[in-house]
Length: 466
Image 1 (cartoon, rainbow, N blue to C red):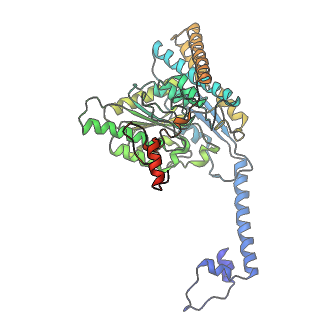
Image 2: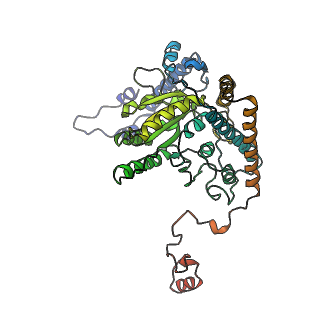
Image 3: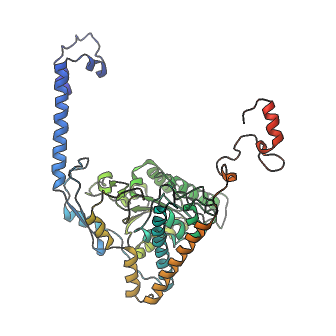
């Protein structure tokens, strides 16, 4: 279209240098400009028509392994920014059948630990939503209802001195790592007794005691931090000859994060230095409002994108597991942690899951269909694990009820503690912001120099700006 429009102008002599397109456009006649615009509109119109027509008939049914996970995808007719590549139902089923499912047996003690932790996470998130609506919890709040099997199954394979890095959906990761529910809830209430003294909030849970290296508000931020933790472990072991340096780091992130640069850069470095790190992708199919199959390109030869296949490209083993099955997650992470602790390097794990709430509590959650939500609600990881425990005679009905009540009591205690805790005072305002807020240094009494009345008087006399 561009060539057609510009060719209608008089061609310049060969000796005349061609002007940049921007200047050529200003010399076009009104008729040429009209033809150009009409051509552009026609092309865009054909594209929109073809895309939306292709989508109206496109339905992908996905069955995930022996768990018979069914999912139908029907894009909105009003949305046209998507691929029109045909998807074969049989090809999808073959690809998805590669998912790793639970194969072993866990002990009664392990079952009790996992079940209580999953219930604590679910009940804690439900309480957070309630108190957010009551105006007690502030800021952006992202809940992990539905994703408990990943947090519990993965983190409960770690020691206390192992490291984890989370995302903005970090509450249950902190709980699984052993952080006090009272302090986590107090942080959500912005109280002085919070895990970060009320200065971190929902997206920034941090605990040096538990090697919880924080939640991160922007996607991909936590992966380099996790990589740094894994690097220092290897450096201590190999360079400093520290026999106790065998800690493993888990880096959690979502499916959308795998399309940003930090993901690829960190996989490359982790493999290059054989770092003791496990990359755990919590693939809940939605990066805020972007559907996974519209945002991520498939590997060569596939019709659907599989994040776990990005691992071998960087020379590391990888697995895809049912993220709604805590036993499957537990087994996959146990193997990866053992490899890392033995000095065999990193692993990439894709855990396919689903969140039962919107992206955040500010999200009306209108992009996902009711049918999709209902389909995944039937795969509730807590209900699934409860039935697994009963079927395998690991715990009795009464024991499970007792664990549920214990989780309820823990959450209620956390709420009461948070609600009655004091708010941060003004003396905290500059804490953890700058090492020296005004830049004048520390006085002999251990306080900042600018807090000394004499220093202020002398500085004012000298014309210094405080």
